[in-house]
Image (cartoon, rainbow, N blue to C red; front, side, top):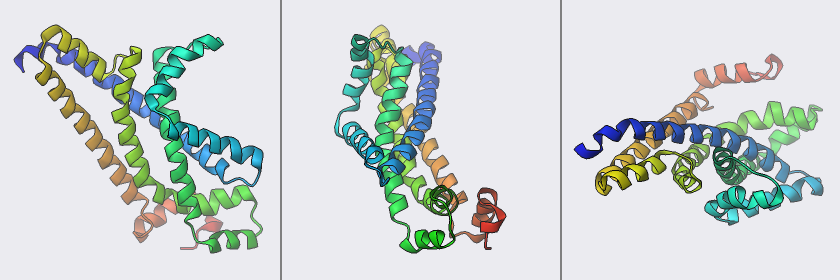
Length: 233
């Protein structure tokens, strides 16, 4: 272990890049998940079919292949992405495709009476989604989205293959310099676990904050999200 101590600052820089990729990829994945998930439930075929194709393609192919395609194949079509952009796109689109099914599943799991009641109140489709459906579906999405975020963190190790200097990339550099394979990869194993555990704790905290079974906390949350006329308690 002593032989890699001088390289800890380098590993720290790689860890920061890994965390930045995780946050940026998660933000993109959430946006993609909501857009694709809601689009897949559309009654319009020209909206539903492209969303379905996107979800099935990105769920049914390897993220490594997607990453290589974005970085190495797109230049043949006149599009050149820098390594960081290709990495974030691959992470966000791949995990967003999985997240889209989380969004769709949480929304379709709501009781049918919720939609029927919203229609009876003459709410527009946007109002039904914004004020009735999503406020009830989002709490159910948080635990699986926490898993998606942890999975995205682990997948950031693949971006080292397109020269992104993340934690895995810097660990390989240190290993090549020192030859201390066990010490280097044991260290980053612990670092990945610590970050993943922190993300899990954060997901659990958010889940508790929006848990509708906790009246006091749930009431304060809904009062911030919904207009007063839609808050009944």
